[in-house]
Length: 192
Image 1 (cartoon, rainbow, N blue to C red):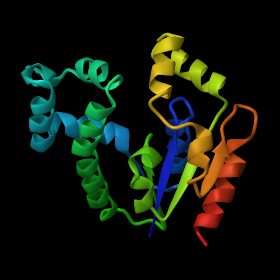
Image 2: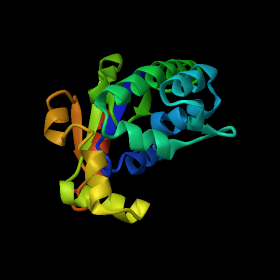
Image 3: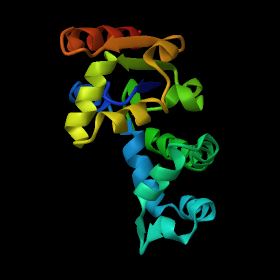
């Protein structure tokens, strides 16, 4: 069984491509979604976040994600500490999930595989690329937010050019180039 990292910047279409992969019969672990679930339920993460942000990080038993976002997007050191707290637990959760899969390929969809160095834990990586303006439009439409809000988030991720240097495969998701043909070609190579 090969473990494949599926990544791309915000607005690149990771979830869209991951759903296609699932329809093709390959299991996909959604790291960002699982991280949110684990952040609410894992006692180590909860205690670590309280240590970093104070009791107000949980309102009742609900995570105050806005508080965390407002503090980490402009503080690299704090963002690194949060990543160092959450990512090893998500990684262990992925490994546990893999044990229950029965497929030649399993995919791990995650936004920041290269930034965190976790790309090294995979047999191969697939990078989804899209023009910057298209990514901005997609996120603005999906999240009903401002261009400036999208740019802040984009600026906290590596560019496609930086990621391409480390990626094993790339797929252009520009709403013009057929993604299914590209994806099938990548999967056929991965199955060899």
